Image 1 (cartoon, rainbow, N blue to C red):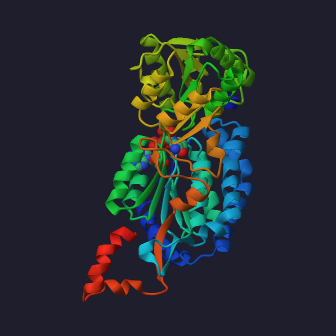
Image 2 (image 1 turned 180 degrees about the horizontal axis):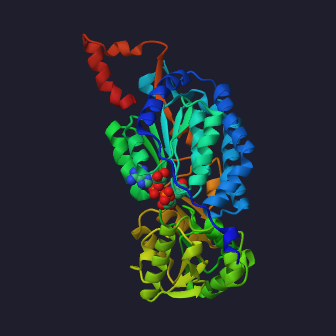
Image 3 (image 1 turned 90 degrees about the vertical axis):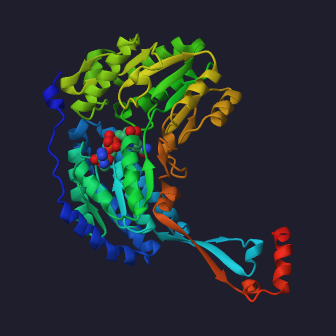
Length: 483
Ligand code: NAD
């Protein structure tokens, strides 16, 4: 194959100047104060500028995706650019309503007052984004921050330098640095940013770094949204539509070549349908990417692994699995020089194989046969709460059992990964897979403070002012019964 033509370009990251970071952060203070009074029209104007910039740079975005890790152009359009348009459209449709003070009925104690929630912009926001969907996971939260009226500093990932450099340029051309600024660089840049007293930090990345971010945020009591990762289990029971399950799981797993936070990580499949499922998954992979090992490696629809370290990490998971008795059902081609590992199905994996403990984030798919759904639920509950969980079944009782006896950030019943695209649902994890939510109204709320406001109409509270009288004591007696 023509590897030269397909080569993934590498480039060095230019690290931001740390004094410059502090200067821009200080300069965003006036913007933060001014934007407290911003109207929906002004906020939407900023979002529109961002959308127009993305549209104007579409070809370069596709090119950057290819240069960083050979992301297929179709996947750049569908999974990087489209979600930003969707996020922006949702804000355009609903922002006026989201911004309106939300009236609440008075409790009995509060008779004589009006209560409402005022959504005020939290203030200066820091967005730290990962490499796997670098544009989507940087500009998507940025739309939410702008909708909420917050100026932003973005720190994109150093692992996708072409996309990060492009975003940096795109933002510089579109916004004044006091509105939105980008600082590229490695961990040291993140650390300098994390020392600053931002009003909100929106972090997307691994649970390990999420803990560092939350620790740093604690020093300034800054609120956080943590969009983290983990091992998202998929269950295919004996009643499932096997062909639909296999095709959809293969699509969910191999889009971005397994480097998706909500990709099905491993599959529990009922032993009665296990062989059928493996056969259908192989068919789905061959249809999507070619029916020989060479054809798959040359397929323009399979992204590369992001860098040599991650290629070695995933190869390490595969080697460890095989050493511990894991059996390869399909795939197994490894070409480190091309940052390529074939879509690989594995089975017979002991629970302590590394692949069963660490987030895979690559093209390996463990398939675990089961007889008892109880046992599967037990395994899911023994692991940290995942970001997503998928159940394939036609049996309502089984669906109900899985949905009510497990916990995960999000879930799909007879589908995979698409809950990310549903802008009216909160997107986020739970505990180890994250804290807080993104998307639509939930993204707007992440960057907004819900200010509780009580406005007095008539002053019943006077009854409780000193000097305390017999009437006060009488009210104290009857009050608990009248709440
Ligand atoms: P990562 O945690 O290594 O890096 C994320 C960001 O944090 C990068 O910008 C990086 O420069 C910065 N960073 C790294 N180390 C840091 C440190 N010590 N201090 C401060 N900042 C630091 O994650 P990644 O490898 O870029 O992305 C993969 C992970 O992200 C996976 O776990 C995946 O599941 C998760 N993820 C989650 C979502 C979601 O929406 N929940 C989406 C995509 C990826």
